[in-house]
Amino acid sequence: MKTSGLVELEAVLAIARHRSFRAAANEMGISTSALSHAVAALEARIGVRLFNRTTRSVSLSEAGAQFVANVGPALSTIRVALEQAGTFRDTPSGTLRINTSAGAANQVMPVFIAFLQRYPEMKLDIVTEGKLIDIVVEGFDAGIRLAETVPQDMIAVPFGDRQRFAIVGSPTYFAQHKPPRTPADLKAHRCIRTRMPSGAIYHWEFERRGETVRVDGDGALTLDESGLMLTAARAGLGLTYLPESTVNADLEVGTLVRVLEDWTPPLDGLCLYYPGRRHVSAGLRALIDIIREHADARYRGMR
Image (cartoon, rainbow, N blue to C red; front, side, top):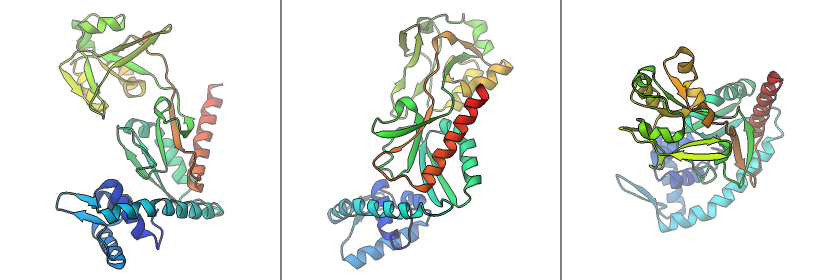
């Protein structure tokens, strides 16, 4: 939110979160110079320096740290008051900041499109990244992730079909390697390994009739982006572990072949989540309503 009269305070909190004038300016939708002038004007007015600046870094001064600690809760209260007043508008307006993954955003785009078409005075700021973050600390209104990764202290709104992963390889790969029949057989295969945002290697997960198995496959290639994994698998470099939605088109035309399908049961789908202790703005409530409409429509279509 960039409400008139609060811009300087919002600027200080954004810089404190990002430790960067550029990143804070991008979040607020203003130029870096305008942001710098706003902070400089505030510092001049209160007579203290809030940030220690160098050519490479930005950090809070002692006075700045105390200022942020005091202003943050007060500004949050003001935001809530403004949002509550805004609920009396006939049409929601403002900006919703949502954190999600690139894959989830692709699945949810129809909902985002429907939301913006219905509420033209609303704006969406979608930030995609692999790692999980604290959406409250980072200044987001909501997040969208797989249900199993949603923090327990958040309110979750489920939507989207249940998710399922697939083990796939190219026909040329299987012309030279016998398809695995159990997860243990993967030890004899080249696996395209997945590096998670934390830097850890993801262990492929399998389950059948109550038996759970996690496999750290061996392979010459480790990647951290699903599109690259798909390209490598098509080229016959090994087996990869990806969401069904990512590989379905290849499976239909035969450029990839699926194995171990009976070992990859469906998982809970995506959820939009937000902090329960925070007032739900009119814009977020409107997005939740559209999510539920889409979920109901899918359910009716399956009957």
